[in-house]
Image (cartoon, rainbow, N blue to C red; front, side, top):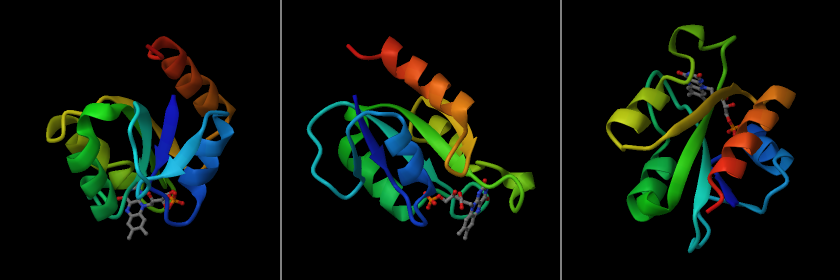
Length: 117
Ligand SMILES: Cc1cc2nc3c(=O)[nH]c(=O)nc-3n(C[C@H](O)[C@H](O)[C@H](O)COP(=O)(O)O)c2cc1C
């Protein structure tokens, strides 16, 4: 499984790389199924780059992980996940904080193992 990340400050990229699969940024060419690692840019707001990626590749996205900041944005932690599920029809794997922790890595790896084919 390929991991595709939309990461501005590098935390989503770091999480992507900790999964031990091939990974690449959203702006690169894509021709295989992937897991999307995205982030938030405000209460319930999806980054423009993520929207563009979804419009282009929706059918290749098996599920997504949203990366938020509970400390600074507790009220709207990973607020864009709801929209990604309801409006874009994507499957939420997990909301994580920053670069994620060992449990996040384990959970996402388990999801991938169940969705490899
Ligand atoms: C302008 C702005 C607004 C944000 N709003 C939210 C938010 O509403 N909820 C949330 O959970 N995180 C919010 N965040 C935090 C980002 O999702 C978080 O910093 C994320 O880890 C960035 O990932 P990256 O390092 O891969 O770019 C916001 C960040 C920025 C810069």
